[in-house]
Length: 228
Image (cartoon, rainbow, N blue to C red; front, side, top):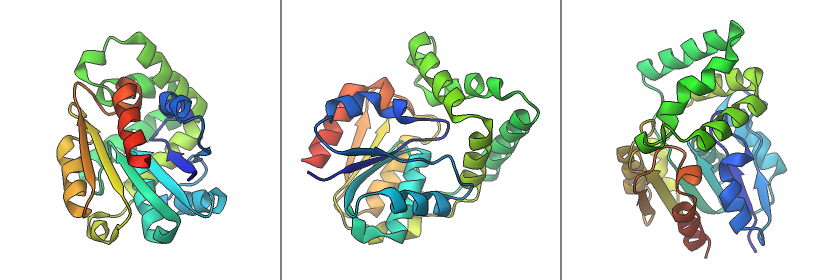
């Protein structure tokens, strides 16, 4: 059975994929460490150094940026690719400005403010009062920590435009997004889908950016079909 490498998003840990890990317990799963470096390429190379020779690869948000870099560096090692709630575009100035502001808040010793500030953008509008989901996001942020958060933001800000490389991806690819994703809206996934020949697009209803946690059954079903 093909091993599966899961790459979490910004401020996220393996808890992001907890429902999927439980459902895929019969398959070898590696949770990628994306906290040690401050460039997307360095993170991708570190993951490749620890991954099996051949594997299926799934990444959400920042995890998608890293997955696309892995496809640039070692496409021959990836049997299947899943890009969840992500974009192939680089940051626009307004996004970079927001990231720099969050870095400043963190460097000033107020990291505990970051997760509450990000939560409304992370989830669908119908989950804004979901305290269980809010607690998961807060716990993942605390586990990630301020130093790793700053490294992740610097890596994201410096990432390149992956759109010109989409046409070179030839493995079976799933592109999935929540219909209410505010950070990487459905048009970003549609762009990726159109760029990767033969890819499959899944738009999850009543779902925001953290699709694996907001709609775990729908996402797990899509992943199981992708892996079949």
